[in-house]
Image 1 (cartoon, rainbow, N blue to C red):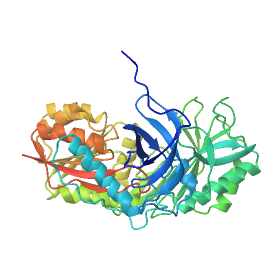
Image 2 (cartoon, helix red, strand yellow; image 1 turned 90 degrees about the horizontal axis):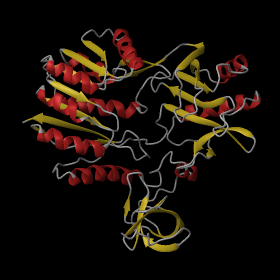
Image 3 (tube, one colour; image 1 turned 120 degrees about the vertical axis):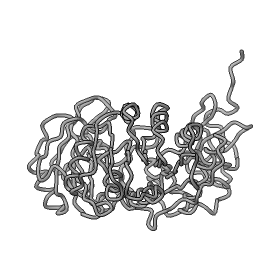
Image 4 (cartoon, rainbow, N blue to C red; image 1 turned 45 degrees about the vertical axis):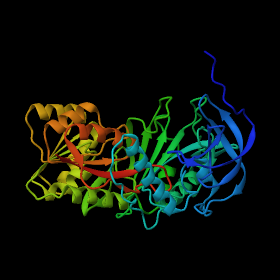
Length: 456
C-alpha cells in the first residue's frame, strides 16, 4: 500500500483563510484539504503561511504576513505570552474567547449525538491577573540566572517578568526572588547535565487573605546562602508568611519533589472560599482562580437544589472545597480523594471551620464508589469533579446503580464530559436544562462547566 504523502513541505509558503481554531488555540488553514495549524492566526483572517513542520496527517505553520485581519483580534497583548503558550487565547477579544468555549462544548456534544443546549459562557469582569499560584522555571540564559516560561512545544526559556494572567503581586515577588538569587550567585538548574541548584520558584498568594508562600525547588538538600535569601525575601515582601524548600533530585519534568522543609514561618497559608477558611500547603490542590471558583461551585450547589436532608457524596474531594461548601446545606457529606496529603488537608479544613457532618476517605473514587454501592450506601446527590481524563466506566456504573436523584458533574474537559454524558444517559439519567460553561481560566483554552444529570 502506497504511503500517504503530505501535499506540503517544510519552508513552503502559501496564502489561505483561517477557517477554525483548534482546542489548543491554533488557527486552522487548509492546503488541498490538508490541515495546517498556525500559531497566532484566528478565524476569518487571510494569512501567508510558512510551513515549519510536517507530520503524516497535518502540518504546523507560522504567519509570514497577515493579509486580512479579524475583528476578533486583541492587539493589547505581549507577544511572549503567545509564544510561550501562557495565554494561548490572548490574541482573541474576551467576547470571542467566551464564544469559542461555548462553541467547543456544543461541537463535542454534537459529535456524541447528544442534543443539549449550551448556555453562554460566564466570564470574568477582569480576565487578567487572576492566578493565585505561579510555578516558574529557573534557568541560565546568556550566562545569567533567569526566570520565565518555556517557548511552546520546547524547553527553551523565554525571560518574562509580566505573566499577564498571574496576580501582579506574584509577578513582583518572582522578580524580587530572581534578583536575590542573582545577587548571591546561585546556580540555575541545567536539564541537560542535571546540575545546578535552583529548579523552580513557586509562589502562592491568598486572594482574600493576601498571605504569600514562597517555595524554592532545589536539586539537592542543601540550599546555599539560605539565611541571606530568607532575610532578603522577608524584607522585600512583607506579605510572605511561609518560605519552604522543596527538594526534587530526580531527572524529571515533574515540578515538585516529595520533601518539603519549612525554612521560615508557617507550613501553610490560609485563604477563604464561601466564607470558610482553607489552609493551603505547598502540595495542596487549591483552585487557582478563587473568584470564579465561587461562581463555579455556587452554581453547582444551586443547580443541585438542596433541601437540607440530603446525603451527599463528593467524588474527587481534594482539600474539601466542595464538601465544606455544601456541608451546611445537607445532612451528611462523604468525600473521597486519592492524594493522602489532600485528605489530611480536607480533615484539617473541616476542623478549622467546625464542620462535623463531613467524612473524608482515602482511595480511588471509582473503587470507593463500587465499595459504597456494594454496601448499599444511598446518596441523594453525587458531585463529581474529575481530572481531565474524566470518569471511569466503573465509577459511572457504581454511581448510577446507587440511584441518586442527581449527579452534578463539574468538568474541566468538555471532550470527556460529552463522552461520559453518553454513558450516564444510557444508564437512565437525563441532562437537566443546559450545560453551563464558566471561564475559570481566561486567556487559555481550558473550559470548565457544570452539568446536572437527573434520574429519569
